Image (cartoon, rainbow, N blue to C red):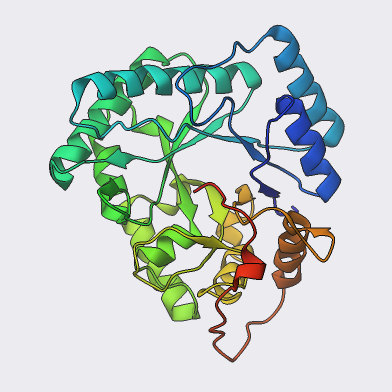
Length: 308
């Protein structure tokens, strides 16, 4: 089975345009926002929009598309008005995924905004419970994303995700999106075989590797344990290529969509998504390097800001 490699693609002009762009680069899957990620309001998904997206997927032979929820949503908020607004918005995100035939919705767990981790985790679990109750008949899985731990964001420890999942009444509808930059920034090493195995063992203990339904593949501009979320191109940051070699060649993740959230734009006239896809493919079925690479991306390597 070939790996399902993709990237987050713009939906400017329609969700179907993202599929066409992904196919042009050579991806086998993709991730999208189903709406403007920086607005609460969402344009209606018409039957025509849905049909165009599904037709584009079929013609491009792309499989297992993934969606990412809005940055505005915070199910951990202690503010009741924002919490209820976030539940409404998250419910809408699930409904839009269902309409488009997208089975995986990646979501940042939320931030506790000063109330403390335990109360934040309880708040997130209660919010997810309500979203899952409202959408109980919809075939969409919520993939809680590992975070870098900036500010009061939760999810930077695997135990946070495990505790959230344990508290919801329908845990079978919750899974995990593992983001490499976020793992590294949160202090989980991935470079050597021993480091990678140790990190995966802890992830397995806390949530179970069978819950990992999506990978985000991003190098990190900042050092291990920095808790700063800054993405870089594959092999161009503080992580280097070895963590990606481990993931790409791990048979446990062979069927999992792997999504680039690396910088966009172009380098020497070539789309950076295509550059990063080529780097990933070169790491498949290749033996590990002996030297530990410490190169940090420079301004010319990084391109524009990307989602996290």
